[in-house]
Length: 439
Image (cartoon, rainbow, N blue to C red; front, side, top):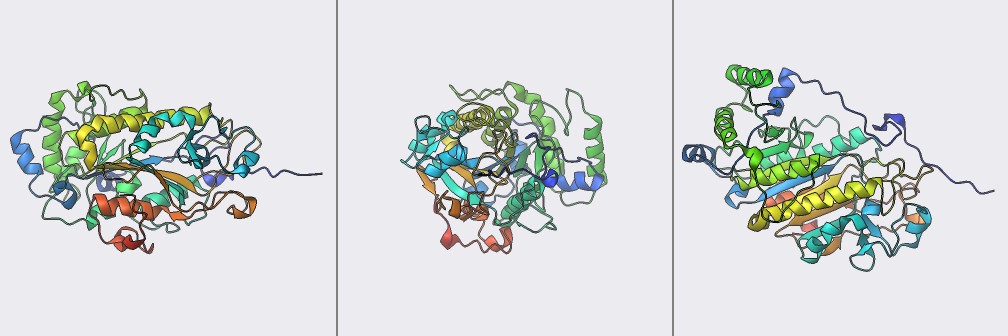
């Protein structure tokens, strides 16, 4: 009598066994609030001359070259095997009898790999050479906890829980400076600065460009805005002072331009979703010439333990939103897209075999996308480890062959001008000579 292994997830891995991410506790303290510098600001393309002089007092390497790095985090562990499908692997279909993407449904890329059919918006970007794919990428850490894995990827130090700052903040720290940079150098879309951008470099959290003040809503100054202003006035914290006053002045000037009526480029329509609105605002900020060098956004809903679906269904819907939003962002940036590099990441992949509830459980290797004007796209990078039973990690997952830090490191090196990879990814031994050379 044959038996079939059903993989299940431990309850302390960060989800509730129904494919939903458990919420983190979100207690805002004065120290945490100050350190994060979570200031929701308003953006526009109309910048008063005195403010321009103030913001651009000095230039950084990326600012001088007009380079911008956008990082997208897919929270919940995306199923990379159904995103970029190894449709030439026989065992892929054997392990996924009801959720595999059939060969006649796959958007073929090179005869071996193909895109999920809901990602049609990515195919032109790939064909035009702007979109590169890195498969079997991930963390060397073996955790299957959402919380730990996300923390390790955002800090850039897998297995180390005491790291105080994020890899992208350190990448900005490593960039050559000629003095005081823009107050808007690092921006996150959300109500608080994410782990990725926490650190010595001040970062701003943009809750909603159509709203006013600090993580608040409505046309009037909110209590939290007043509290932030009071904390700024009393603080000697370098995170706030130096750029804080200019930031407040920028908010006062920019909010009057009614950013809610921002119009994307002709022919561009973003999905009417939280992620669609997020990247639309990233485009608005980048095109406003505020000196943004690094922008961060995220999209949840990738934890597909149950009823994942194949060509249609839960994952399909998320992939359609994800790909169409990024494609709209790329088109919206127009000629400025030549100076943009966008990279995506997710904490880990999912099991090669489907489980007993039509879903997949927490796995290991995943797929990353890199989109940019200088990206050598139209290619799937990385060494493919194979999906034969004996090739699987721990007998259940796609194995990691490309460390995610190597991908992020190359993006930071070639976009921001970060050169000290040991400072950005301590202990990782990220060597530019070993980059994949996707850019």
